[in-house]
Amino acid sequence: MEVLKLIDEIEDILENASSLPFSNKVMVDAEELFEIIREIRIKLPDELKQAAWIKEERQRILAEAQKDADTILNEAELKLEELIEQDEITKKAKERAEEIITKAQNNAKSIRLGALEYADNILLETQENLKNIIDLLNKNRQELRGDR
Image 1 (cartoon, rainbow, N blue to C red):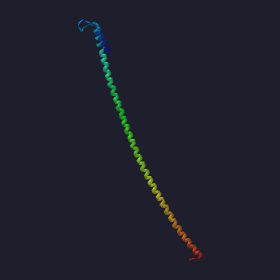
Image 2 (cartoon, rainbow, N blue to C red):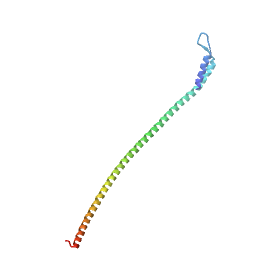
Image 3 (cartoon, rainbow, N blue to C red):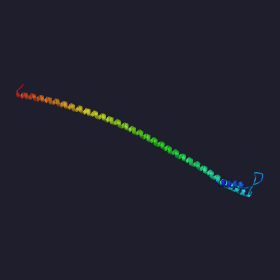
Image 4 (cartoon, rainbow, N blue to C red):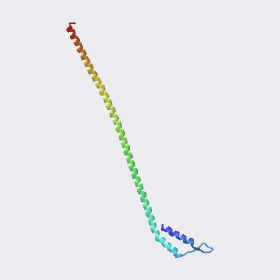
């Protein structure tokens, strides 16, 4: 800031000024000090405006950063909810798949047992028919031989 440089210049003038004997007073060139004070008055409003602008810009940047942070946080929360929801869907789908597999296995077992029972009944029936046929054949043979 130029104002600070000008104030430093005033301090330098006062430090290098001739002092009056037996006092803490110094002799300075009044015109030179007035010239520096006029420059300070000219520059001070510009620097105050610049400082105010910097402060406003800082506030704007902070507000924008907060808005961006809030947006990122909201997006992250939505993504998390979506992932949780997908996880729930996956769990439900796995549970449903397990139910379907169990039901299919039970149905297959039932069908297998039914098929075995059906085959056994057919074989039993065939065995009975064959037994009857064998008995009939034996009876016919006996009749042919004359054994009664």
